[in-house]
Length: 315
Ligand code: ACO
Image (cartoon, rainbow, N blue to C red; front, side, top):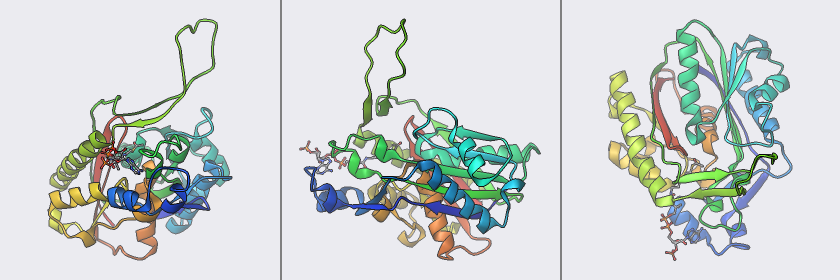
């Protein structure tokens, strides 16, 4: 397949580091130095489903495809107000599509997993046009009195339309269960048979372990995808990495021994918007006109699970 269109949508509320330091024991200097984040977009009155539909419509317009021409919608989402129905079904109705749809939860690596699924369905002859929407509101997962987590995240939606082509050269996924490193619990409805104690626990993260996993997994995944596509690291025009922390991006850049200008970033003014990071960054680069036909692009992301993945494609 090939990516023929991209789109994104962001909440209107911008929250700067200085705004956070008004109610948290933190500082612009700490957050910028440790993470690279200066500000983030935070959901307030918006509904995530509306941002998702807006991103989807922009991607369809960019691709020159009508909603009724879609054969499949994949939505990557960790959490939203609904437990059911699935967000992809809500997006399907909002944009006027009639095709089947599915939600996946592969944490921040959702976009890479969705591309792998789209490509597999395409190779099996089941689909021609696929819409991927990553829609995330991780700011609703964190405890906003916990300076170790809430400063890291932002919200938003990113979308891509994939159409027939052989531009996706390789996708490599991995998983290694580490549920104690990054997790969140929510309580379900009580029943007469539940006797154990249950409680809602906001996002818990062992930051340094996640950091080490991220650098190792991304370096490995990208190398595997490059080897599989027989493309040298030096031949890649752009590396679009998960925007969790500028220090993670710099460490992967050092491992690959590639110049910094091949690594566009937006972590500075978005923070980590989970699986939306990759398609939002892709859309921003696309709309700036950075990509020319034939450019080689590597993407990589990692997240809770742990799960991770990388892809190599030609624009
Ligand atoms: N402001 C000020 N001080 C802080 C803050 C803050 N916002 N957060 C933590 N600190 C303090 C800590 O309390 C600690 O103080 P202490 O030494 O007195 O105990 C000190 O800063 C150092 O804390 P560390 O956790 O060691 O700091 P570190 O350099 O590891 O940076 C960070 C923390 C930014 C979280 C880093 O570990 C990181 O980026 N990890 C990866 C996170 C990530 O990628 N998460 C992805 C999640 S994706 C998903 O699937 C949802």
